[in-house]
Amino acid sequence: MGSREPTLYVVHSPLVEIRDLSMKTVLLSRHTVQQRGIFVSVSAGNSGPSLRAVSNEAPWFLTVGASTHDRKLKVTVNLGNIEEFEGESAYHPKTSNSTFFTLYEAGKSESDRFGNLFCSPGTLTDPAIKGKIVVCRRSRGLPKVIQGKTVKDAGGPNVASPGILKSDLIGPGVNVLADWPTSVDNNKNTKSTFNDISGTSMACPHLSGIAALLKSAHPDWSPAAIKSATMTTADTFNFAKNPILDERLIPADIFAIGAGHVHPVRASDPGLIYDTPFADYVPYLCGLNYTNQEVGKLLQCNVNCLEVKSIPAEQLNYPSFSIKLGSSPQTYTRTVTNVGDAKSSYQVDVVSPKGVSVKVKPSKLNFSKLNQKLTYQVTFSNTTNSSKVEDVEGFLKWNSNRHSVRSPIAVTLSAK
Image 1 (tube, rainbow, N blue to C red):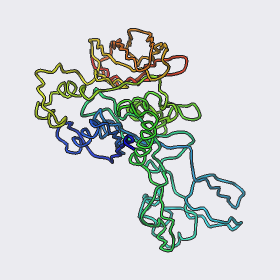
Image 2 (cartoon, rainbow, N blue to C red):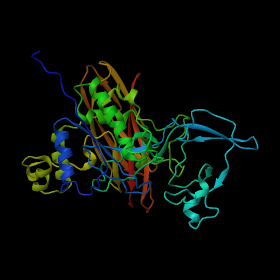
Image 3 (tube, rainbow, N blue to C red):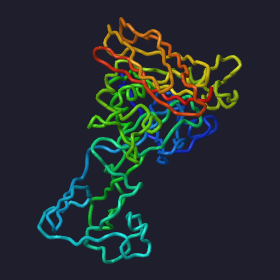
């Protein structure tokens, strides 16, 4: 009884708007708990898919976007002409019968016709609706849930620190069954108080739970290691093996999905991880030109940036790459830690962004033991002659005979 079991702490934080990494009290508190080994997952926001709408951009967070999922409260509506339509409904009668309900066309006769067409909240006030099936038009605010994944997320890139790709990844966040303080149909005689809720604040707790499971399976992993494991093993395709779509039903870009959709089983055995020691945040923050006082306040220590060899944000040992590329090549390094097979060999596989040359040295990583660290170098070169600013994307993967470790690459091409 003399020993104590290790305690696991995981923090789920809601949406908070942060544009300056140095001055936000909430950011300070989150970094402080991260420094103590507590994993922090945060919501990316719900203002996407427009660019630069992402929130909670600091690199010590796991910034989570929201997606749909393949689970649904399935119902089938039979029409009088024998046609059948499959959909979703929170209303599931205990017994089915052959009674036909009257259809009610939203917006047909009421004053706020536009709002009613899309069944906007608070607009369906006609008493004649009661007991009928209401037919609504589909709108951007009511995303179609298809099998697989559709993104409803904040859009990057990262405003506070463009050298860090945000969002980090996405998780289930649309039509999530949740406890609710009151009955959604105002029925006071029921104990069934639940609701279907959507948003990145629904996706974030999924990742908090996954992080708790990963920490339980790997007690020695740091918060950065857990984040790396979830990112490098994420899915970029849906169950139909097609690209993940955004809520406009077009392929989602890298700023919407980050590394992709979380895959918990693969995350428990990632092969390699990108760890980020606390000390690395000092040269990172000094490289963002914050003052000694600002950096010291955030990190809760005395800092003299003149004595620190600062680094650009792109050089932080992060599981993704986000760079602005002009005429001059840029070279960055990453260090990976072997948490897979003791003796293993990884070969690099690169899909370069359009107009970008990506060269990796060495092209092969040979590990001889667990927890061994190896460093590689990546050089990015602009191969276009275009004068326009353009966002392009690709990825870098390290493949062994058992693992695939993927890092997304986001490049903003500027005029040469």
